Length: 584
Image (tube, rainbow, N blue to C red; front, top):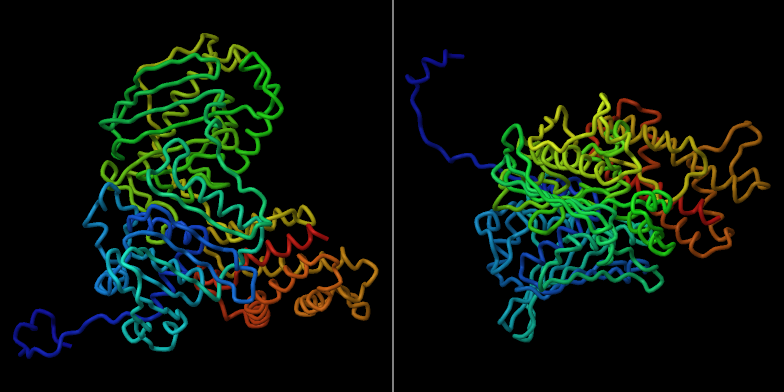
C-alpha cells in the first residue's frame, strides 16, 4: 500500500456517494431493548399526549385479561394530518421538539424523538388512529413490529399499511391500540405500581393545569394508592431550599408545631447545575417518636395513613417542568445516598421516612438531560452538582435545623467538644466521588419468597445484572425459577411426591418436567386465579426454558449484553410464581 503522503498523486473520479442504511433491528433496539421498564413506556406515551396539547388522556387496560388482550391509549390532542405523520411521527429521533421549546403555554416534555417507539416495547402490533383538529379526514396506520426483524431488512423497506378514514371536524386526537402484548398486566401488583407512577407523574402540590390522565383496569382492582392533599401538611418537618446563581441557597424550614425558620446559606464552590428547588417532607411513622418530637399524640388513623402513603411514595423524586423523571425516588433508588449517611448521623433522614421533590426545568437546567432510554439522567458534572445541592440541603441545613427543634435529642445536637451546634452561614458542598445512578434490577419480587435464601439470590442476580454479567445473571435466574416451581408443587402436593421428586433416581425432577407437571395440575389448585397465573407462566416461560437448557449444555453460546435478557421476561416469570405460591 502506498504511503499516505503519496495519495495526492493519485487520480480521483467521483462515483455515487455512500449513504448509511438503517437496519430494521433499530426499531427494537430503540423500543423494548431500550425501554425495558413497561411503566416508563406508558409514561412516555402520556408525555407525548401532553406535548400534543391534549386536555385528557385515557389508558384502557380493561381487556388485558381477555383472549384478544390489548392496551388502548387515547387523547383529545391536536392529532396529526398526513404530513405530520410522515415528517414527524415516522421520522425517528426527529429534532422537532428540541427546536421548538413550547406548544402554546406548555413546555415540551419529550426530547429524544423516540417516545413513539414505546409502543414497540409494549406489544408486537400497534394500530394508530389520528384525528387532526379541524379536518374531516383522519388516518389509520398499522405497525407490525415483527416485520422489522426480518433478516437483512432495512427500516425503509417496511411498509406500514395506511388508510384514510372519515371523521367529524369536531373530533381530534390520537388513539393507539397495542396488541400481542409483551408484558403481563394482569397481576394486581403490576397494576398498582403503574397507577402509583401515574399518580405522581406530576408533583402532588403542583398539578398540571388542563391535563388529566386516567387509567382503567378491571373493576376488581383495589383502590390505587394516592397522595392526598393533606399528606404534605402532616409532615413533622418540612424544608424548601432554592438554589440561585450557583452559590446562594435560600431556605424555609417549618415544623408541625407551627415554628418556622428562614435564612440563606452560601456554598463554598459554585454549582454548575443551574437554578433548582428542593422540597423535603419528613415523617415519624412511629406514634412514640412522633409524640417525643411533637409533644402530642398522633391518631391511629393518621399514623396508618402516613405509613401506607410512604410505603408507595417515599424517597426523593426528580421533576423536570413538573413531570417526573424515573427512576429517581423508586424503591432502592437511593440516588442521594441518604440511607448510608443515616447510619452515621441520627439527624439525617432515611428514604422510607420522607417524601421529597427536586424541581428543574429545560430552560434553567439545559445540561441535565435524559438518557436515550428515558430511564435516568446522563451523569454529567451538572447532574453531580444537582445531587450536591440536594445533599447540602439535607446534610448541611435540614439536619442542623432539625437538631435545634428536637429537645429530646440533645446529645445528637452536640459537637464532640460538648458545645451546641451553631447554624453556619457558609456550607461545604460535598463532591461526589462515584456515580449514584440507581442500580439496574433484573428481578423484583411482587410477593413473599418461600424461603429466605431467595432474597440473597435476588441480590446476587441484580448485582450481576447491574455490572453487565448477563450469563451469570441468567444462570442464577434459572436456579431461582426452577426452585420456585419446585416449592409450589411441594407445598401444594406434599403427599403427591412424584410431581416434584424422581423417587427412582432420588433427585428432584428436571426443570422441564417440573414445568410440565405444574401446567398439568393447574385445575387442581382450587382457585381460578391460580389457574390463570399458571397458564400465563406456561405461555411465557418457553423462550426462557429453551435458552436455559441450551446454555446449560453448550456454554459457548453466551449472552453478549444484559439487554438480551429483556426478551425472556424474567421479572414477570418470577412475580407470577411468587403470586402462585402466595395464593396456595
